[in-house]
Image 1 (cartoon, rainbow, N blue to C red):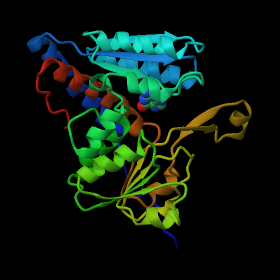
Image 2 (image 1 turned 90 degrees about the vertical axis):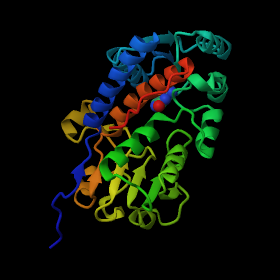
Image 3 (image 1 turned 60 degrees about the horizontal axis):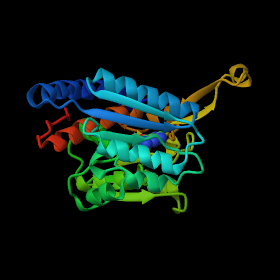
Length: 307
Ligand code: GUN
């Protein structure tokens, strides 16, 4: 008989993120008390995509709860690139703003890379500027994209030393896959970056001690793609019709990851759930980056934030 009993630890990203936000909040209070600097984050959203609106509201609320200054700039979806670039320049020059995040995607009339490239790299709390990508690639201090940063923190908290482990990252985006590869290399993992053209993806995945799924395809990674005992990080956030056909017919949806979660729990050693895994870590790391950017702007050494 096949044993399908759950064996995986469910890695509680939500709880770890709450602890991280507490540490950032305490560090933020000390930075303001000792050095008179209150970290400030400006979030810019163009248009009214409902998912982006929810993300942006969450970011604003968490920033304020951490004791930081939070500004949200909501622009119409007809905004021109020139006007958006002018706002970025204003925020670059504002000494009370230490972090700038322009929510993606942007409307078609705007060239995203021109906008991301206009953000002062020292305020680029998304870590998307080519200067920060370059700093990460050569091991210089910079600002690191939030989702891979949060995923790496959670892996270290779960597994301790990652040296020598084989990490397979499925997805090669600039936002997750590539920076994740850099971070895991820096932790002395052996790193494979797999993608849509990789041959025999299931076999590649089965060779992973650490499997990072960042493809944006609902439940693509099946249980039998996972090595028994492996640690699985699910970065996907995919909205699909409700599992209940009546609710699905009413247009109700649910959120699933890139990993078939219940199958993964029967094989993996640990797996992050969706929701409640990597998502909360991403927001916590945005605050961590804002705190670090504020410390650097003031010439103050930042406190260690990992547990
Ligand atoms: N849209 C979805 N995720 C992100 C993110 O991490 N940063 C930005 N700027 N936009 C996003």
